[in-house]
Length: 152
Image (cartoon, rainbow, N blue to C red):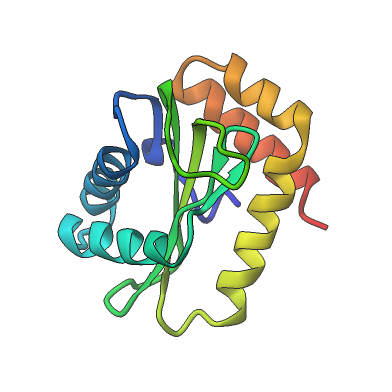
């Protein structure tokens, strides 16, 4: 997972008040780190959300999209400063957001990465650690430790 996410791709206190604002802020950070257009990333994430919310429940969302100009898979993690409405399957607000951007050609690799993230974020201990970590370095350490142990 460390190949998917860098410490710079972690937003420890996302200030967004709603889903669209969260996706916009995530898109801006992703654009800064990848050189892709923030608008292109935002539009792709929003288009995916229109198919059905990526709020998986228990305060977690995994927005994702495929982009033609993406050169590789890229992940970004954000912890909301305050839980935000995300139209999650359990109707609970979200505070842990893991965005995944992949090239259009990613195919099964994209699905495998999504499954791995979902498995990791279903673990109550992981969510507790992520909610307890308050800075970028601590969050990065938790994510790298947990993605290694949830790789199976």
